[in-house]
Image (cartoon, rainbow, N blue to C red; front, side, top):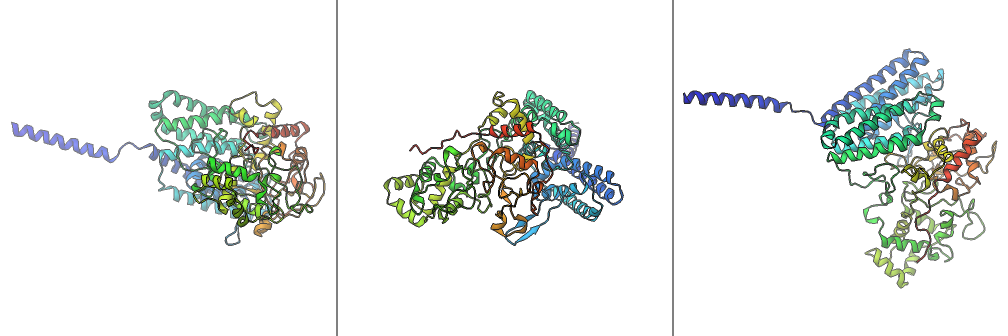
Amino acid sequence: MKRTLLAGLALLALVAAYFGFRRSEAPAATTVERVQRQFLADVAAFETAVAALKKTVESGDPAARRTAFLQTRLAWKQVEWLAEYYFPATAKAINGAPIPEYEESDAKTIAPEGLQVIEPLLFPAPDPDALPELKRQVAMLQANARRLNVVAQNNPMTDAHLFDALRLEVFRIVSLGITGFDAPVALSSLPEARVAVRSLRSYLAIYRPALERKDPTLAGGLEVLSARADGYLKKPTGAEAFNRFDRMAFITEIANPLGGLLLDAQKALGFEPFRESRGLRADARTLFDAGAFSADHYAPGPAHRTTPARVLLGRKLFFDPVLSGDGNRSCAGCHQPDRAFTDGLARNLALDGRKPIRRNTPTLWNVGLQRALFADSRVSFLEDQATDVVTNADEMHGSFDKVVAELKNRPAYAALFANAYTDGVTSFNIRNALAAYQRTLIGLNSRFDRYVRGERSALNAQEVLGFNLFAGKGRCATCHFLPLTNGLVPPHFEKSESENLGVPERFVRKGGRLDPDRGKGGHNGAAIHQHLFKTPTVRNVALTAPYMHNGAFGTLEEVVDFYDLGGGRGIGIHSETQTLSENRLNLDGPEKAALVAFMKALTDTTAVVSPNF
């Protein structure tokens, strides 16, 4: 009896072990695994859409080709958030900007490809002669869609990275999606943004059960807000819908709260934001947070970041003419604090007091939030900018060797250097101290910023209209990217763009001559970079007249007129490399006035700007 009982218990144990083993072979899928499966399915759907586009291009009529293209773009928006995050090179080949790039290391020009190159071959009306190029581009797109499918198959993911990607997609929708950056001709930005939001909702649904257990109120709020975003973007395509879309309301009422709730959900689920150095901090709730950006990220390295002692020293050096060859000109001589660190001149005079220097003096506000410096983008770090200016014969004509010797003999300076650096007075430490001071010149608390953070009395109706024009019909934000309004490309903010507007020697509404300054092309010799200039910030622009690299435009009204007319080509100036569309914006008088009013609302000079030692 006892033996029979033991045998029965052993059998039960074996059965239990067997079924337990079978269960362990197929555990419940993790959130990451479920995201991976859904992403692979969405990538396969995108590849299918591209195949359908290819077939339609080969055998369909123009209307069918346009429809197939729009469907392909929608399929791309379904996978954009993760493709851009994990596979940026492939994503660039699929939906990168339609302009050639230049590899300075081997003097090689790389032709653009992808959806944005295909778009003008189909819209607004296809050119029959361009059909061979259309077929070629679609074939390359199909190859890149296959490439995306391959690289996505075995890509490791983590929950923290996925939430990071979700929030970056919200920022991408705000800064690139609703502004029409990647659909400038088809004007399909709003339905595409809607698909991007729907994609985020579908992936968030995977996390919802866990989030409901942690914080049901947060889970419900996130679902309601993402549904509102979906509904708000349910707009028809076309110019009228694009122009009328209330971007300010979408940002303040939906996108900003959505980004914040995503961060809250990430933390509630235990996936802490990354602490790595970034231009846009990984824990920023919105693009418009007061401390969202880190100028130290753009320093040469961690050892060269700002400290209070370095800032104090750099500030003193900035206002001291000791850096100039004749001891008469300081950095502040041209970058005057009360003029937003400009000088109010089209071009300042050289040190000899006779000839003008090469270009207009740019503002130093937010200069630390850039990846390229000078109008021709010839250096990457503020330390190198200091080298160029101090040693330039026309600007300061100084010598760092002489300045080092001079400062070592000044006890007050020697003490400041000893407090800021372990190796005292050196050429690099002089440059780094100047850079440290400039990295504190951050002005992101304008009336516009306060408005988008919730202070609804900070802007009036005209200024709100001006913002909607800036980010919509006026196309300003497709080059002056939000929220910095310079050329630093969102949402990663790691590359500064340059543009050729076809700037004339002086402002005219018809005719004129192209300014001879070759800009970036004069620096690197690239044919595609002739007359390209770094996109400057529009912040504090009310204080920085005259405008353009040559100071040819005296007022903001003239600048708006020039853009409205289509830049240089629009007024009859031939410039082969012009990147600005020559199509007129057709802004009316009140719209132009609203644009100017908004730009004036970007003024913020509240950071410390005077010597006051």
